[in-house]
Image 1 (cartoon, one colour):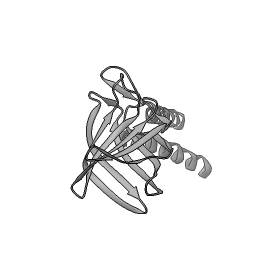
Image 2 (cartoon, one colour):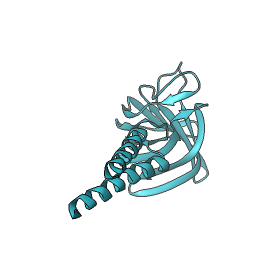
Image 3 (cartoon, one colour):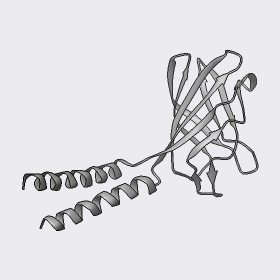
Length: 175
């Protein structure tokens, strides 16, 4: 009986672990750079589904500059089309003014639709910030980090597998 439970726990654990790294889930983006005109570092974070049907999406975006954090509930993220070279633009409105953070670098997706978002670190080769279509600052270096976030069900399966192995281990120590 113990052997059957151990085998089942191992299967659940391995299934959960492999799904945690294989499922589409969401991709969490963190873009960090420096606003040249202010000499201030900034961070933009957002999440996207692992597969997109359109390169133009609306998602909550968090912007942190000089220790101040603001969340924009309906910011627009536009991944550059295959004819353009670049990562993506993030369009949001600050105090009633439209801002466009443009991140240039290697493309971070594959396909022609649906589009599969890539994971990894992408250097920002060139970056610019526009207010109302006018250039207000360049960005100085930085990177975009794209990391898969496993689905809650995957984490639950992984946890159940670990719990099963823990129970069997405890029973073995008591015996």
